Amino acid sequence: MPVPFYQRIAEDLLQKIRSGAFPVGSVLPAEMLLMEHYGASRNTIRGALKQLQDMGLVSRRRNRGTVVESPPAMGAFTQSLSTLEDLVSLARTATRTIESSTEQVLDIATARELGCAAGSRWLHIAMTRREGGAPTTLGWTDAFVDLHYAGIERLAAQHPDQLLCDLIESTYGRRIVSVDQKVFACAISGPLAQQLDVADPSPGLKVTRQYRDPGRALVLVTRTFYPGDRYVLATTLVRHG
Image 1 (tube, rainbow, N blue to C red):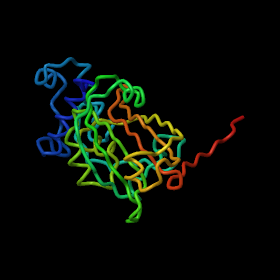
Image 2: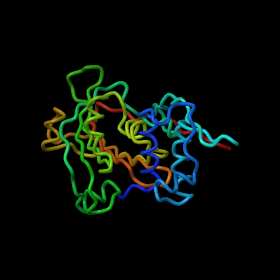
Image 3: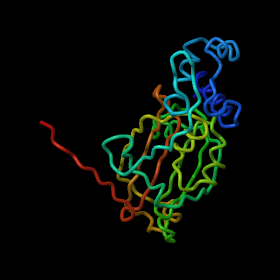
C-alpha cells in the first residue's frame, strides 16, 4: 500500500529534527516554504506537521510558528484489552529472535487470513519468543510489514525488547492508533509443531493483529501461534447500566 505523501514529508522532517538540522527550540520553515520545498498542498503540509505534533516533537505557537520540542518518552502497550494502551504485549517479558526475513506476495488464502489485499507485497519477518531466558519457545510470529519500512528487520534485531509498531513509530514517525485483534483456536502441526517442540498435531491459539495508522491504513499485520499450554489471554468484561 503506497505511503501517503504527508507521511513521507513527516518522515523527512523527523529525520532532519533528529540529525540536528532543526534543533530543539528552533522553528520549522513556514507552511508556504514547506509547500514550495516539497511541492505539496497546504493540507498535505498540515497533515505532516500534525503527525509530528501528535508525536510530541513539535508544537504550534501563535506568532512563533511550529517549534521543535524535546522528544517525549515513548508510550507503551500494556496488558489489558480495553484500550489501545492496554494491548496484550510480550515485548518486555520475552526475548525475540528473528528466524528469517523475505519479501512476500500474498496469495488469496493468506491475504484473506490476514485481512490484506491479494497480490500485495510485504516484508515477511518470522520470529520466535522465549520468556525469561527459558529454553522453551513461547510462540511463533509471522510479521508482515509495509515494504516502505524494510529497515525494520535490522532495528528489530538490534532492539529485541521493543514492539515492531513502536520501532516504526519512533524511527519513521508512522503512528499506530488502533490495533484490531482476533483470537482463534487452531491445530499446530507440521514444521510449526517441530519449531515449537510440541506433538504433531497439538491444540493451540492463533492471534492475528492489524496495526493501523490514523487513516486506517494497514502498516503491520502479525500472526502468532501459541501452544495451548503456553499462553493465557485474560479479559475482564464490565456491565454498564
